[in-house]
Length: 329
Image 1 (cartoon, rainbow, N blue to C red):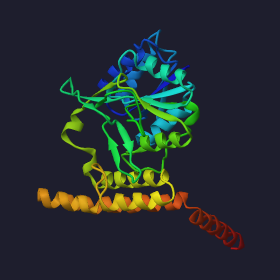
Image 2 (image 1 turned 90 degrees about the horizontal axis):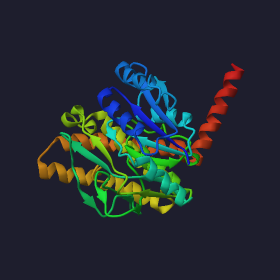
Image 3 (image 1 turned 135 degrees about the vertical axis):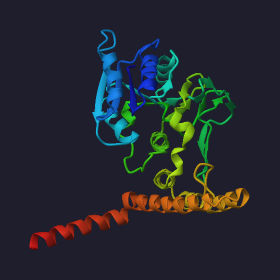
Image 4 (image 1 turned 120 degrees about the vertical axis):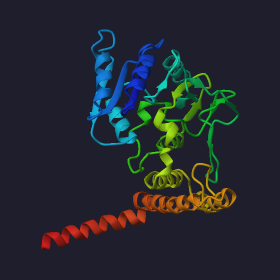
């Protein structure tokens, strides 16, 4: 089976160079290496051109320029160009071991019901890997609780509900595009695609031996991306939108109640925010709660507008009426 590797990058040229080297030095090299950069990211473009000039790597690299910001738009452009049977994703600040592609392909060849394969994303701080172990890698409970230990190594190969975007792969035939209805910083897009593949009857696997090493950039050490108004709203919007898309019947109601009332560790609900603010005596948590609730409401409304048949029919009729009125004028 042929593998295409997609790397979406933005203004991290030093990390990108190491990532590219790790992919090009694989025991089983990819048939195609797609690197997606923004048009104004000249330093990253310079790094890519250095590899393209080399005789032995020139034919592998497909460099795509995009103007639209965001990981989802970039990786969708990469998907359109992917020709492999399997499409693999890795972050630009991660390094893959030499067996990464070989072991990925092996899983798909052994079982045609495997739809996705990935592994742990080991954080490296100050150059040192933080090794921890876990029984459960990633799962979604029936009522919508998201349990994830993607930076830890599971005790065995296990079927999971979702993978981490820095280390995941899918059968190309099962992935059309990532959902561009999600908001910045586009968290949960991996959950969405993995749950979609499972709904088609395929399995998602996590292999503890398929770990990649993720290097903390200076920006990540100093500032969390989840502390601005935009990112708080975006994360909670995406969380409830994905849960509503992939829950059925009565479970939709349960998931909404859980999301708003209590929530996950990364996307708390009202009472969890309240408990944090009292325990920590931190008014910031109440501020964060306000924008989290806005995000959840927006996510629920986005789901209704894009998936509710009654609202979709109303929107179609309204558009038709507007066209008729426009013609009469």
